Length: 156
Image 1 (cartoon, one colour):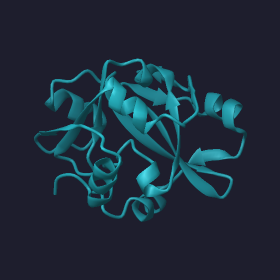
Image 2 (cartoon, rainbow, N blue to C red):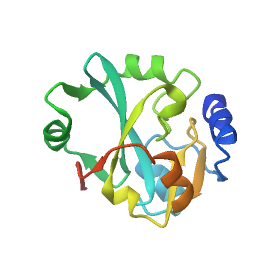
Image 3 (tube, one colour):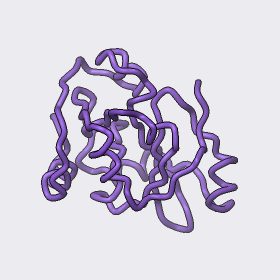
Image 4 (cartoon, rainbow, N blue to C red):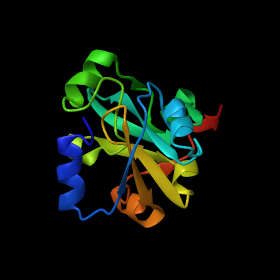
């Protein structure tokens, strides 16, 4: 399948430089990191959240788990996890479970965990289970420039 059309069009329009890294089929972000010999601390995963009747994307390292209580303290109590049906409707051109950690092209606001923002390079899912995108820190920072940042995840 390769890079999702919505994502590719957005990255091109924003002149974001990236490298495509093909890999064997994987079903989780941690397995993807292993397959690509990339630290899970550098692979950004997007977690779709329901908030105030809409949706947003929490971006954090694949090696971390979401601490919903900390996110609620930052964003308010009306924050919860979106279900698979909702995620599928938001990311129509992506394979099931392969959510890119890029929200704007899908109409989603972001919140970015400080630990992923500190990495010298960041990898993101391309919208399938066989392609990863490598961005240097500057390019990732451009993608997340207007997003709030904070600590809301913990290392597994």
